[in-house]
Image (tube, rainbow, N blue to C red):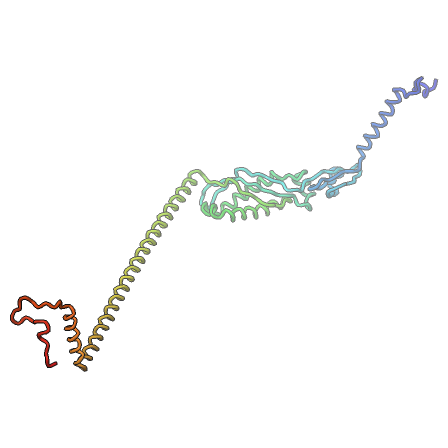
Length: 306
């Protein structure tokens, strides 16, 4: 019987040997396809470093990349990375030790991916370089400030650290995005001295404010007293002026009256007659019971010749 007849059973189905042979062929095809598969993808925010036998031959952008079998694609991150630097130590120009924790955000420059991949990192992670550079920069910057200035000019210190760190990390192909200073602190003894100074300054300012308040109150009282005195003086002046005017008016009236009397004596006689008439109006018609010598008798002293 021939081999073809032996591989096929009486029922016409494929024999186990033939199934195994085709399975091995399919596996071999899959292995070849996997080994020779030319397609690769580069995710968003990454670059693809193409190497050929260990040597960089190109950089692929985001998306689909087609490579021959003898080339390899390594995915490289160019997105923002974060490096946390804990407990960086330095010393001020007046020899005060200082510590700080910082967060540095950076990203690899896309045009320097090949250089960074070859020299520093195959993934884009430069945390160790950033940590070391930040420690060095912090020491250099704090040495230019006194401890009080380091506290009072924190924004300037942060800016100086950022500028120096950008200059230092550009060597490694990294662009610094921003830095955040955290847990900025001095020694416990120096912080206690600062707190004491702040307390004393607050007490001094409080005393000055209290003194200013007292002075303001005293000035207010003086102003009120002066105003009251001015009011009294004005009132007295007004009363004196009024009295003067009244006296002047009375004197003028007397002068006018006397002048009138001097010019017309009949007026004086008229006044005397008016007085006698008023007396007569008040007399009840009775004569006094007792008349003393020289006592006037009503209507008996009328001068008949007048």
